[in-house]
Amino acid sequence: MVESEEWVTSPDSYNKPKEEILKQKRSHVSQYRAAHMQLPLLAATLLKWFPNLGEESEKLGGRLVPYLGPMPVYSGKPFIIPSYPSGQVPMTVAMRRPLFETLVRRLIMNSCKNVRYLPGTVVGLTKDSSASPNAITGVQIHTSEKENISLSATLVVGTSHSVQFFHVLRPNSCQYVIFPDPKLDNRILGLMRRDKNTLDVLVGGWAVTEEISNIDDLKAYLSSLKLHIPLPAWIHKTMDLFQQFEAPMRIEKSRLGISAYIQYHLYDYMPSNFIAVGDSVMTLNPIKALGTSKACVGALVLSGILDKCEPNATDRLPDDFSKRFWKRHAACVGPNWTSNKTDDYKYETTTPSKGDNPKMFNRFQKKFGGWLLELVLKEGYNDVAATASNVQRHLAPPTDLFSPKVLWKIIRYKLFDTPA
Image 1 (cartoon, one colour):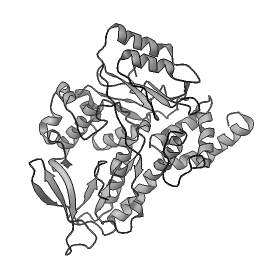
Image 2 (image 1 turned 120 degrees about the vertical axis):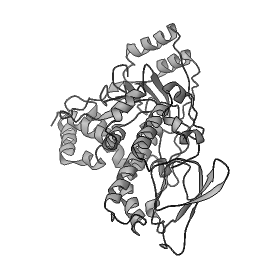
Image 3 (image 1 turned 180 degrees about the horizontal axis):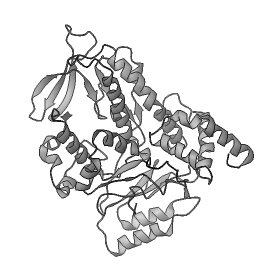
């Protein structure tokens, strides 16, 4: 693993006390200290590979908790809490990002003895004409000691946004999350209990101009939110308590870049052993908290394809390896691009992609999404709420929303306004 920040490559980086870990800075990660929501696909993936996830989380002050209600709120209206079969409630990791990154490094380094970190930056790829004509044979690295070296490689995986080679107050992690009605407001609110007694308060949205510098600014922000149903009184009381007892407060501001989708699956001449996952393929509006889920999907697709490779061919991958990966990966993450565009275009401040007409873009999905939203806000449709929740969290494919059962409930509701 090539890592640009040298302190991350040291064994001390994942064995230090929690207090020291939180002091470290990640100059190349813009949202390192920002509030994060970990969708349950992340915990499900890590639990599959690291059964001791919960135990190791607790060592850093975090915990593995059910990803339950209160569910996200639409302009003050709570979503219906999905019902799940016994023992199948999705889980999440309640932990701030600096500690969570440390947790993942610790799990990997303590479980995979053949993994090592190399401090440096990938600056190029190499090919050897004597090898497979369409395969990368090595990686060029500029090390932290300012040396240029080359490493041979059987498989190259890009993972960061910069690696684009084409020049709750209960034991729940999310206590209260508001998404706005675009007709009323463009701002969000999230309250999330993290490790120990830390509370993340997430504010922001689409083209937000407010500057939050102190608790008074935060209280004014909360009071100015335009909602169908006002904020619960306990939120304002909580802010009053923070102010009364002068609770320690640290403000982290994140300036976000544009959304982008590098559609590697459309390239005809991709190296047969180069793939990429996460932000190096697609960057989306972080409000939807899909960053780690995108990376998990890429890792799962890679794992599935590797499992089908010839087990004895340790030094070479099939000539169509990357083509198979990109085809399956695009089918899994591609719908996120369209659905997030559709949501962002509801706000007039969004700059459209070249050739897009925001008012005409994906009109069917907008209409269908509106009908679906009506149902997940209404009593008597818990199973539809569970389906929508699982799709949103990457625990089920988007096609589940178009199952005969869901479609019939929507038709019945629109025609008779009664649960089917």
